[in-house]
Structures are given as C-alpha cells and as structure tokens.
Amino acid sequence: MKYLHSITDLSNEAIIETIQRAIKIKNGGYDQLPDVFVSNLFFENSTRTKCSFEVAERELGMHVIPFETSTSSVSKGESLYDTCKTMESIGCDVLVIRHPERDYYKQLEGLNIPIINGGDGSGQHPTQCLLDLMTIYEEYGKFEGLKVVICGDILNSRVARSNFEALTRLGAHVQFVAPEIWQDHTIDAEYVDIDDVINDIDVCMLLRVQHERHDSKSHFTKETYHNGYGLTIERYNQLKETAIVLHPAPVNRGVEIDDSLVEAPKSRIFKQMSNGVYTRMSILAQVIENNRK
Image 1: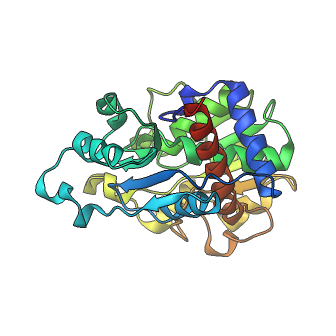
Image 2 (image 1 turned 60 degrees about the vertical axis):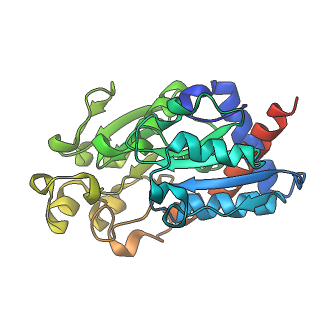
C-alpha cells in the first residue's frame, strides 16, 4: 500500500494484511516513525475520523502539522491542488484528506507524496471500511459466508459503497435496507425488508441519515424512519445471540437505532471507534514504509 484512495486500491490479501497488522498494533506491536511529517486536510466536518487519525499519528511519533480551512489560504480562493502542493513543498511526507467532492484525489496526481482518503463526498471511505472489517474480523475470524445487512441512506453513503465492495469480495453476503428514495441502483446489491432478514444476519450495519445531503422532500420524521428502517428494541431482540451491531457514527439516537441500544451487549459501535486508531496506524505505517523502499 503506497497510498489509499479507494477500497478498490487494495487486493483481498492487502485488506487482510492491514487488519492483521492493526490487531498486532492493538496488542502493542509497532515501531515509531518519528521523522515523518503529516497533515490532516479536512474540508468537511469530522470528529471520529480526524481525531482518530491525529491519535494514530501521534502514537506513531509523527509530527502533525495543524491545518484548518477557516484560517488557511483556502478562504482566499486557493485551489485544493495548490494547498496540497504547498504542504508537500514545506516538507509533509503524507496527507490525509477529507473533501466534499467525489474523487477529489484525481486532481492531485501531480503530487509527489501519498494521499490517504478520509472520505470523498458520497464516493469512498476506505479507512472507515477497514476499521469496520477489523471489528467484524475480531468477532468472527472470517468474512466468508457471513450475512451482512447495511441499513439506511445508501444513496449518500460512502461507507455503504466501500463496505459492499470489500465484504462482497471477501465472501460475505451483503444486502441493503433503505427507503426507495435513498436506494442506489448503481451498486449491484439486493434490497430487502429489514423484518424479513433481521433474525438471520450476523452483522447489522446502520448508516447515519445524512440530512445535510437531502432536499426537503426526502425527509422522514424520526418516528417514521425509526419504525420502518431503524434498529428498534423489538428488532434487536430478534437478532441472533452472536450477531453484532455496527454504526460509523455520528449516531442519530432514536432514528437509526434506539437510544438504549447504542451500548447494548451486541453493539460494537464504540469498539469500532477504538479500532479506528489501530487501523489508521496500520495504514499510515504501511504507506510510509512502502514509499521509502
């Protein structure tokens, strides 16, 4: 792995290697990278991804160069390319970028340093995908034959797109649950009714309702969405004892999931967040090492 733009950049073997390295890191097995300069360029709001990367970078001993769009030359009209080229010119070895434009990284091919994609519009979110996969792998030790349902705002979800791609390749059976207005038929997935599958799945992955990407006609009331598509207490109780619940967060409590279930025994939502640090440490270490060969 010399960069990470999309989960499609990685072979199945590379995905497993990244997960296994993250698990090793979680158990204390990693080296420092104290001579590396990194900057996190986040053009969309973020709590988990940005802070997780910062903790991962500091755990590896990297020098983190602060960057805020509100105080940068972006506010003066500087292009994304020129901003990134500036960071390269002053000595950054790697950039982590989140941007609202899908496939933004294609305009950065003139850079001589690697990009790690922290999310591009409704395109891809490969590091979230890999931390989700790590969480599933820790639970089951495999992907082959697992039954996964991804519920929610599929149309606007980079998480759904990345996870469907990776999980399907790794042998899981993935189905979608979504209101018709939020279905994305460019993805070759089967849409099902949540109540038809809830008692037979291994992983229930919930997605945030992305109000900021909707027009007013697509809004549901909290109750309507929760009752039709969310993880209610009744649905939770129908899950197999061995099933797990995932959510990339932030969570709209009482919408995608009942408030009382966020930290229920089958929930791995906060474990996902912890695993995000180890996964991103694994990714950063691989990218730096492979670019220095």
